Image (cartoon, rainbow, N blue to C red; front, side, top):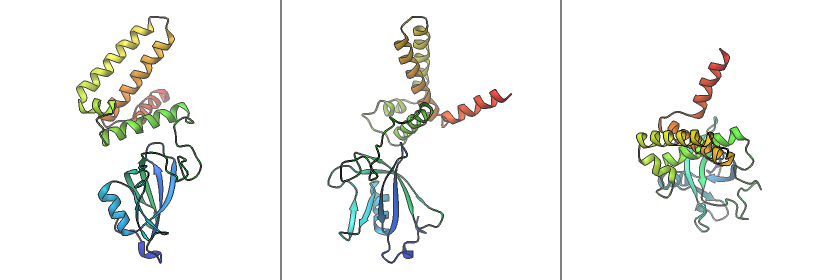
Length: 204
């Protein structure tokens, strides 16, 4: 990241586009100096350079709606950042989810996009443990416990399939898909890998 071309701009600031690392929604635009970039990497909280106050500014330092860093990438010209982060609350000072008046949620996703979103959430839980999260606790138990849970959910789905309660059947199907996705992430695989196998089989 040291090769970023801060000197290309007279004020030594580089535009930084912030994207939700999970929903992939664009959240805001800020500006980073060498110092704010360094602080962002050291603290894990996205920090900009405030042009109005001429000082470093950690997003959410007053409101608590911080941006938890997940990744930073440079564009091909090395003069713009893509900052991937997970917001702790609304990003805009107006109280809206984003600075572009867009709702940052999964509600508008189609079914396949939601599965991808769910997988990203599960992957983020694995990479950034939180003791209050069921998913994180499941990952902490290891591969055997996760695989066992998938087996238990499969059996429960079979049991419900023999009854007439459609709601319970669908609930168990959802449990199975969720825990299977956790297992895939634990194994370093993905739903896309499974889809690839299915496509290869279909093409035969």
